[in-house]
Structures are given as C-alpha cells and as structure tokens.
Amino acid sequence: MSRILFVFGTTDGHTAKVVATAAEALRADGEGVAVVEVRSDGPGPRPEEYDAVLVAASVHAGGYQRAVFRWVREHADALNRMPTAFFTVCLAVLEDNPRSQKDLAGIVQRFVVKTGWRPNLRKYVAGALLYTKYGWVKRFIMKRIATKTGGGTDTSRDYIYTDWDNLRAAVRAFAADLHAAPPKTSAATP
Image 1 (spheres, rainbow, N blue to C red):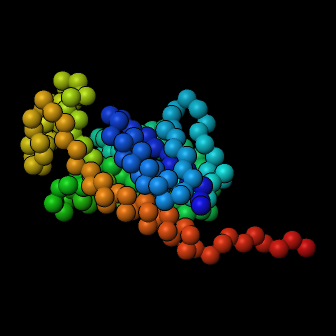
Image 2 (image 1 turned 180 degrees about the horizontal axis):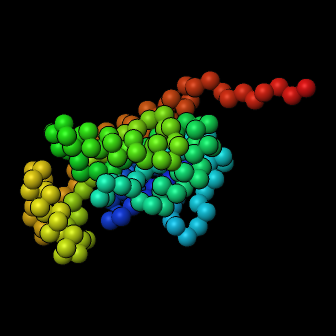
C-alpha cells in the first residue's frame, strides 16, 4: 500500500468530483489516499509525507486555480523527487481541433515551466458544462463557447463529459507503476 496525496483546485466543483472518483478507485485497490483542496489561506499539505502526489486543476480563462499554482511552485523541489501526476480538467479535451489541442498543451507547458515542476504523468480529463451552477454572464459565455465547439447548449441542464472509466484506469496504472518501481535507496553514511 502506498500513501498517495491528491491535491486539487476547483472552480465550479467538477474537479472535486473527478478527484473523489479517482481517489475512490485507488482506495478500492488498497491504496492510502489523502485528498486536499488547496486554498490561498493556508500552507497546504507537505508532499514529503507521502510516497506519491497527484495534482488536479481545471482550466479557466487560460490558466489554473491560483492556489494550486502557488502550492505546486512552493513544493516543486519535493515533487520533482517523487512520482507525480498532473490531471488537467478542461472542455477543450473534447475538441477535435489541432489548434485547441495545441493551446491546451501550451497552457500545461506554461504551468510546468512557471512552477518548476516536472510531473511524471500528464493526463487530460474532459470536464463539464455546469450551466445550473453558473451565473447568467458565465452561462451566456459558456453557451457561446459550447455552440462553437459542439457542446450541449440547453442551459437548463448540466453536461458531464468526463470519461470515468478512463480516469480510473489512469490512476490505477499510476499506482501500479509505484509498486513496480524499485525501492528508493538512501546514500550510505560513513
């Protein structure tokens, strides 16, 4: 059993559901999982206390939640010394458009460069259109975006595009790799 930390940020709540589903799959396989939503008003968890760290954040207006950015940047050195994965939750995953895919890859790359973190795994997860949770301005903007990209436009309901089975398979493969990796050794002391 590994001790896995799953840190996340969410704007409308869907990334929290993504993380809960992924953590549930890991726990069902016997992994010890701590789930923490990082916030701006606290230090957050220490990655050094875990065997591996998963980070999930959603893309909004070309970037991620500030609290996730700050936490990752603050702990980049520790994260780079351990197995890690970065889950990007975004509707652009659904677009069969090379430009959208390039833009999304650029958002992820800017995050990685600015934080100094080098995740072992980068995974894109399709998000959701949560019209019933949006204010009227965001609902209007999201409907316009959905119209252009072929998403759902009935604003009286929500649309969940996440492939839950694919998500579970990804976190299970990550955990399997943890168990397959050779144990960490420390330098001998004189």
